[in-house]
Image (cartoon, rainbow, N blue to C red; front, side, top):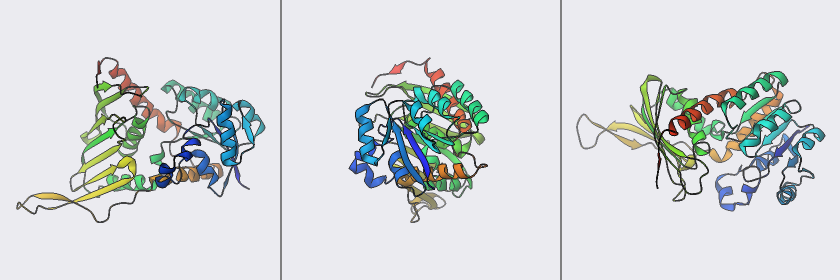
Length: 332
């Protein structure tokens, strides 16, 4: 029997992104609804949104007849195994509180909550009701990003000496993906210094230039970019014996080996490896759904990105924002 899934909040990441034909070329698993509909173990049975036009479109796109403007009624009338929460983050805590006693697994979009206090209350709800909650930092489910992490942690290219990163769309938007990946790879940073802050046109929040130091003194520089010019999300790991780059928002992964320099005796240079890793970022949401399915079947299995995991990320975000309040906003 298939697992029953429902979605609350039927906007872009839930469903509407499927209308972007160009995006589908690179992301075969583009939305929650699309990923559920393509998984052999899951049936998408219901959806909720206060926008009736959006609700009707969702039903037509996915062949879903159980449509609701009241998510509480949806939860009451459907015995769901998996629930996706794709609303604005201001609503996440209240929805999780309502769903925790009636859904096996909750899959929530980021930003996860408004603050660390709400996350601590959600952790308490998990313990009371036994519901498993996973957050969609989708790089944490992608096999190619996990392979890069393993190479770095096993020091395939020697010790990490420096990391340079670029992101756009605000700290809580793309910034969460970047910082979350750094935490998963290196642990929690030991030092955080905010260097400057900016507000780009179209953003609803500040972006920050941030310097961090991780264990063993690994320095990381995080720099925001204006997405109005072009999309940019990169991580560049400079190691002793090579270099690893996650480029094009994860669509390209390059690795370089240090070899003897062609022009100077005793020196070395980097050459691009013929064995560059193939990115699977377009399948990340499918891997996430696979994980959700396993969470429903294996009582001992814990979410890859749990509220406890996200709490570390949220505390870093709050520290950056705290320091940022003392810094004037730079003009662009």
